Image (cartoon, rainbow, N blue to C red; front, top):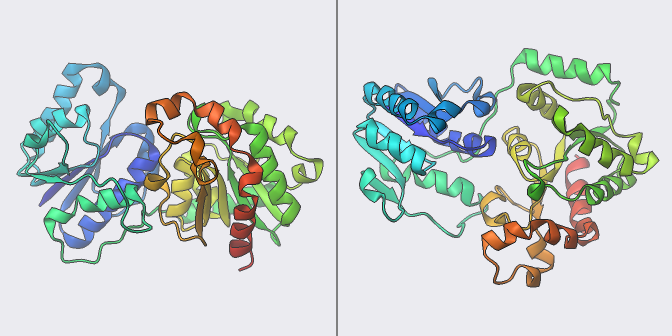
Length: 355
């Protein structure tokens, strides 16, 4: 049996959709399972034994109709028995149409149901604490009636060398072993997904004032100025707990560093999803325009908590469409004061640092 799973888009999406590959491997241990993703997201798939081949959707496929057509032909030649399209946008529709797969599963959406043999309802509200991002992916397995207990948790695989390299990096920076270590998801993928820097500094100060911990910042080298802004805005006592230069060179090294941390706090995004896949507790500060019900995965009030402006000032968001919220995100962020959720941060720290 040959299976293709499609999930273009960002790191968090690709990591979460990898649960399809994981569960398909359990159900069909001898199947060939291939995964089509953006090239930039492949580090979160390294070492995953449930994926046989990674098919890259590259920039050339987006820019050139000829290259997209050639990719479609490549997929068609594979003669897949089963195709699961977790992306379900124009780019994937074309590939699905060309694939000639025997069975094709995706979400039920107006105008394109003819492309698939099975169209699954696109739920609007979560039924469990898994969150819609997870529940929607798992629903794509429904038509297969798999005789297994599905595992909803994405997995990251860290090699022994990566573990030892991360430990050596901690030793090089003289990270205090007697302390727990907190990773701060400092910046979102864009400004409208990034909690205001001066507010983030207040959150970090609160953490440092109330716990004796090591603090690491997650940022890309190109974001160093924003990271410095947060660092300089923190109290002197807080700065002494921050290992500012302890940074990975790439996504895999970040994963290994995160694996050595005890928990993560900060902006929603790939870093949070990777931390959860490493089974680390998480506290998420959502952007006002992001739907918490989708990405607040595994929320249990203990290991995984999140806050959203809507939790405190629903009047500011009431009746506004996602488009308007996105446009007004920066203004709404200014209304999302750190003191709104200090109690939740304290609860999260108490529940996850005392063990």
